Image (cartoon, rainbow, N blue to C red; front, top):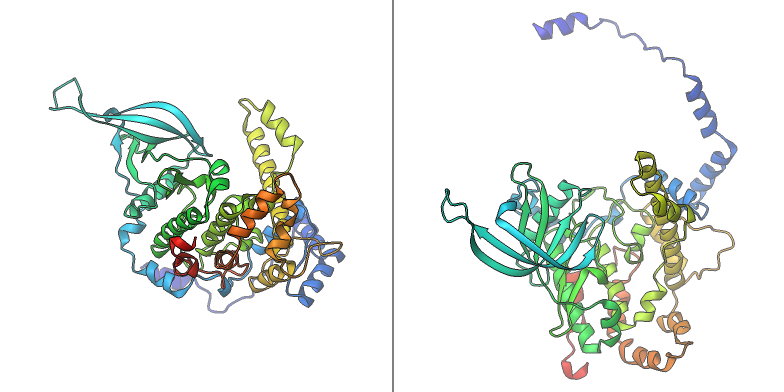
Amino acid sequence: MRATTICRERPTTRKRRQRPSPTREQRKRKRGSRSPQSAQSASSSSSSSVRSVEDGPEAREGGEEKQRDAPFSEHLLAPRSLRKALGDMPDSFRDFETCDLVPLRDYQVQHHEKIGEGTFGVVYRSVCTTTRRARAGDSAPVLVERRPCAVKSLKSTSDQKRVRVEVRLLRNLAACPQIVRLLDVVGNERTGEVTDLLFEHCPSEAAETLYPRLRSGDARTLMRQLLTGLEYCHSRGVMHRDVKPANLLVDPATMHLRIIDFGLATVYWPTEEYQLAGSVPYKAPELLLGARHYHHAVDVWAAGRVFLHMLYPPGGELLRAPLPHLPELEELLRCAGGGGEADRKRRTRLEQQQRRRQEVTQLQLLARKTGTRCLRELARKCQLVWPLAPAGSKLPVEPVNWHDFLAPTLACSEGATRRERLRTHFKDPALDLLNRMLEVDPGRRISAADALEHAYFRRSKRGS
């Protein structure tokens, strides 16, 4: 009966539908889109495959709006072997809803020392006491286990969906010794909310004091472990997306490395759009240019930046863009207190503006080493906006030799010590591996699996 009614209501002759007349606001937007300035930019983009916008946060924001609807670039697809490995993963690897919780009443956590803090949680060195009741009617709990651990206490602003993804990925990667081990997930059984993540406790030393003391053999050992952990992640379709020294725990006594903080990790899907996640100084060029389609090569770039820190710490600082100074944001943070919704929105807008400025500065620092030619070529291949001003730029066009690039770091009181470190660390094959990991083009960047087969890791201890 429903089909008959639909046929009866359909007219036999198709009439041309009349368009409603545009409103005043629509006419204003149409006139603005046809301004001489926009027409000039359209003509310039048709004559050149790489578009340029003015340097600055406003230009960067406009660039992101332009590229959001850009067609997908095949150049940013992951290698076929990694895509095949993702298809072979069992369905349980992608089950981000199931999360087995340990009831709060079974745990007593004693926080001894705060060892870290992130956007969504605070990490403590703790001792966890596990208890249970011998029988259902007993009121007194029975001690089961007491163990040292690191507890990540989640803040109330934590995204529970994001937390469940992190838990599932950590359990998928539990067999790798280079990945921190998740012991338990504590939460509220009634609401299903995760409150604490319990990890194994790993003794570690800060990179600022450890990396300057590393010998050549130590750097090789740590890089082998880092690439082994990343290769294990990538072979299971996982991108970490936040590889940096702060997320690498190194035991100075045993030189055992573990990768931590999978809060930004995700599973790679071809043609999927991703957020521009990660710490700005360790972002790959495709991320700084605003690519929304990317793959595991962003982790290899970040690992290359860590490798540079290990080989020559002052060189790592040369490629680190500082956070720009925004007095308006600092004043807001100082006076916010329990600010309302308007203050929170204003703070978010200012932090995004600060981050965009830092990304442009980071791209400028990177161009001083790689040159602008390869970066512009990457923007052209991936159909991305070139965010640096074309006029008046003093950036080199061609790549700069590492020793010439690092020369300014030698003009200080520690110059002799730094020259000795350059002489012993910056030589083949370490320099060749560094260059292949810091390849601007993600399609030519070495993979974690191939990096482990590099000649740098085949050298004997006697030759280190």
